[in-house]
Image 1 (cartoon, helix red, strand yellow):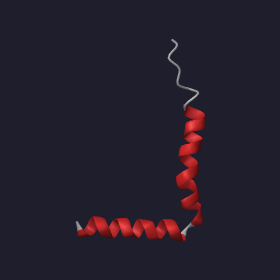
Image 2 (cartoon, one colour):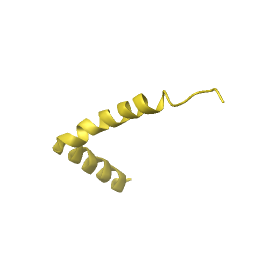
Image 3 (tube, one colour):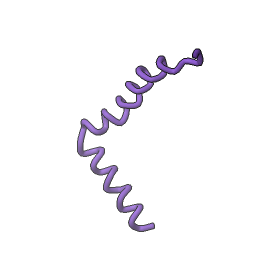
Length: 44
């Protein structure tokens, strides 16, 4: 349990230190939704 908490804390420090990572966390899922959702069709 201590190892998991250490890793979580380390990752949050890394996210807040690097501005690109914090932007990518929100941008990548939005881009994926914009690209992949129109590609899903029920028609054969």
